[in-house]
Length: 277
Ligand SMILES: [Zn+2]
Image 1 (cartoon, helix red, strand yellow):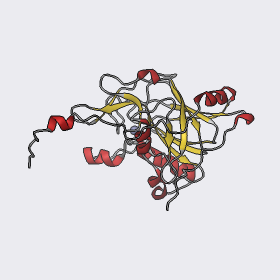
Image 2: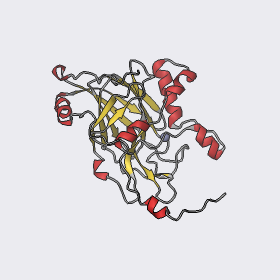
Image 3: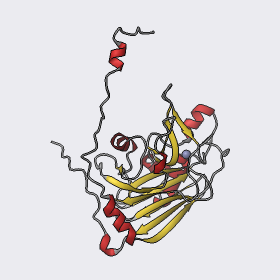
Image 4: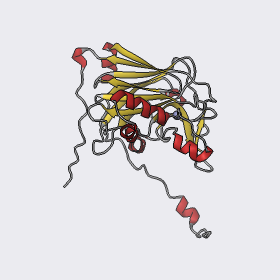
């Protein structure tokens, strides 16, 4: 049934929007302080993520981790879990509500309820120059979910086994010695590292376009708590055409861990102070 447009439709549409979550009162990430810690940090390890696969890595609180594009443009799907209890995990939706649809330097990655605390802070982003393009696209989104075999089967009717969801499940199973039924519910909506995305203005549909990332570009994070990271080198490659298949050119992603000097260790971020009545 089609409903008629009311006489005052234009006036109703003209109401000015307000920001849902003004974020000026969020705790200050203290980027200059983090930069000072980073200057004394030394590389403590690395992990290469093969194309169309995922790996897990540990980042102690107070350390930094850097994700770098190597060999060619490549998108990465990032999950974060608390190393102490992986049920506490990255909350993409609330991070989006607090910081906007795409993350860059200064944004935090917040954890799930009831914790809602910073898991990581973005300290460097070589793609911060990109901003928002003429299509409304930007880089490092928290609006997508992750490519997964279920949606692919729903839309295309066949099975593909190297979606980021599948890769992250397999990596977490291996890392924590879990069966699939235990690991799969822990995999969650991602930070789409290096992916260039937005919503179309005419239909509101989620779009992607070829990532502007080039070898040598990186995004770096400060670990606010002890973390397990999971990173999938998306089968979409630069996500300029297709995903959930072996069609796109794919490249590895490099993860590097940097340890702070002993004197520069900061305390972990604390739990949310809300108390139920
Ligand atoms: Zn993917």
